[in-house]
Image (cartoon, rainbow, N blue to C red):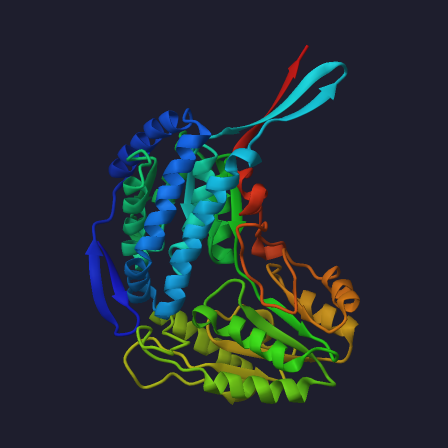
Length: 457
């Protein structure tokens, strides 16, 4: 059985039966059958189904947001925004998928060349708990609009959300088994995930999660010669230059660090600040972190909810403790509160240097790391001194200076004078240990298609 826990109260929410290998085989067979029907549907029919899905998400946003907040602790207003963003990605691909998949014509030695984008089969999504709806729809919507079927192996602690999304697609009019959630017990996850990947009907895998999880799943996919897209961990640098608007920079930096209680792969995690403004930035950021209200995600005004699981809170606290032992200055937070729930207070570590846990490791929670840089070159060096390469940001009043730095950063995206966000209109993904492949925009829908070349004499 899989039991979900409310991280705000530490009380059980619900229990769900886990699937065995035989049941998984039956699910895959049904999904494959419905995929072969779906791949023959026209663009108009797919668009109508996807628009109905968007409408359901919008109409039922409050209900689904409540489930998200119960299962993983996201502040309710942020959970509502997540569901509505999921509706947005449905609308985006309903509008643009046909255009993105149009055959491309060229001439080849007097012959007509045609490049077509055809569906591949079933795509397995291995998804995390921190954005239970958005991260699923981010990969599943373009895969389905390309004509594929989807299998979802979600994080166990958001099993209720996983079931809710499956119901949404059925009610929107998609074939009953085109999108199926599979529920696997943690003790059997390695073997049964391998079974799914090895199945001949499964053509590809999309993984969002830790670098370790991505490496494990990608190894299985590689052995089976299956395509994979990995969106993994990050330790995003936010560089604040001496000509930046410090008030604005602090607001963006704090908002990014505290979003989803700090549990986001593209959250700002390392603030690299020019020495000329580091004291001012530190003072303002400390005030902002201390003013962030932590509490029940259903209470109005709460900005920071609980960490999703107890083990994750203990891991985060260990990283803070090791950083302080290594010489970092703890300016606020850094203690586990004596209350029910897996809460961890907004925390600020200053004077962080190479060799400390908070310098080199991903901190998945409301903990900000402040690193001083003497000039632009040192800021870039520090920013790139990480195994990760997901997002980044630069704050400066000089567009030319900021763009010069952005061009030197090892990252999948860079935002100037703003916080990093995922957006259906932009390709999303990373480099180095943050993964490979891209989600969203035209690039995301073309990850899981057969790019077929035709030549006609």
